[in-house]
Amino acid sequence: MYKQASWDEKLVYELSKPGAVGILVPRSDREVEEAGERCVEKIPPELLRRDLPLPELSEPAVVRHFTRLSQMNMSISTVFYPLGSCTMKYNPAVNNYLAMLDEVAGTHPLQPSETVQGCLEILHGLENCLKEITGMDAFCLSPAAGAHGELVGCLIMRAYHTEKEGKPRSRIIIPDSAHGTNPASAGMAGFDVAVVKTRQDGCVDLEQLEKIVDGDVAGIMLTNPNTVGLFEKDIEEIVKIIHSNDSLLYYDGANLNAIMGLVRPGDMGFDIVHLNLHKTFSTPHGGGGPGAGPVGVVSRLAKYLPPPRIVEKDGLLRLETNEEGVGAVKMFHGNFAVLVRAYSYILSMGGEGLRKAAEYAVLSSNYTLSKMVRIRGVSLPYDTSRPRKHEFVVSLAKLRRETGLGALEVAKRLLDYGFHAPTIYFPLIVEEAFMVEPTETESKEDLDSFIMAFEKVIDECYNNPELVRKAPHNTSVGRVDEAKASHPLTMTPTWRLLKSRER
Ligand SMILES: Cc1ncc(COP(=O)(O)O)c(C=O)c1O
Image (cartoon, rainbow, N blue to C red; front, side, top):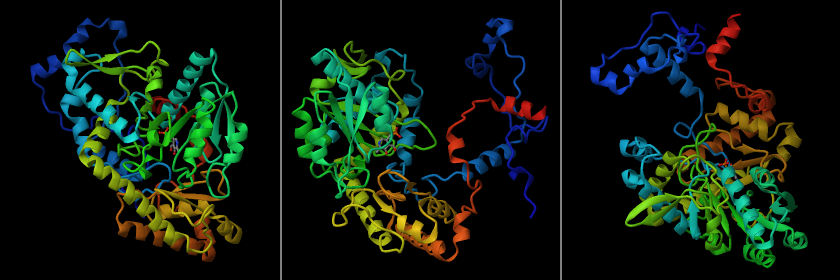
């Protein structure tokens, strides 16, 4: 089959044709002035760039190139994206529209406070909403992701015990079901990790917890519901054990979508919380793009929060640094546009809307699970009598034993049917883990078509295993070297890469 030339898998530089241009709209003198182009005369000649090898392309070539690139990817705007633990819910366009308003996107973080009262009001309003939702007393918005918030939380634990006891405690307890960022963050903050096991019923082993809690334990990091989708029903007992040792409880907010508006981490007894605004509060994420991991604390820990703190003085909102805090963790106010989108989401949903979102997320999850668990080769680990929360983990270990194919191959084959793959091999405590998080924004029809595609793939595993083993077949990129994708990250400018190819 002939392929259209502009659909060749070429870099935009390789498509370049000397002299090709798009439409150039003539600019007025004022625009030239405003763009600062006359300032060129003031730049010392030795600092001026002489050569800028940009590609030359016609307008249709540019449009086709970038549209084609955008279609090579899967996104929540195009497909069902049940990536467990990531809460890939629909990102309402209105939130984006508001974040792009000139009054918001056109401000500079170094502007004097008096000139950006509206922006500060957005931040202040968001802090107040997050306090209400989590039951915390103070928030800092600057951490850029969940993992970043975890680091801040661990540094707060460190600061708390250092002030009280003259030195930090040395260990943090983390369940074996936890996300990898939890132990990584604890390690980065200088702690050793003590692992507490998951019991047969899928919850933290209280007996073991009691044994490992001692004077060196700074705190515990937990997510509730946990990563197998079960609510930690002994949370009150856990809080008692941890607090009676003057240790702190850290809430990993990645799973807040299951309980938002229903239960608050603060009311459960947690002292420090991070939220993933890019998950629960529907701001776009994926591909390493900007996120936000605000950290909330109970009042006795508020002084340790990183700056800037928003305070009201003489009728104006201002930003202040706090000397006792753990130090700044991000430039300016964090990822401002993400914070605006989250605030817009919270206000447009309202309290009742947020609660409903959590309820529907749990309903979608249990509906999907109830159908998938009946399919051969699939089993549900841990307590089968309790409903899961917003996500669930099934095991494809039986399928692996019977066909030689498991979570990896099924996930890859689902891409051929147009579904983003669920999370696989996490949590580590489940053999051939297959973790599905449908979210509240998917219709029953889309859930049903996913379940049908999954059943079809399982059928293929038994009846046409080679087809599944070599999947995906319909995507622009097939199997990649997964370790290579994240390891040798070489940041070479494209034009230099091309020059080296030419040689
Ligand atoms: C349970 C859990 N905790 C923490 C994180 C880390 O969040 P982030 O990816 O925003 O750093 C994740 C991310 O997927 C997660 O699923």
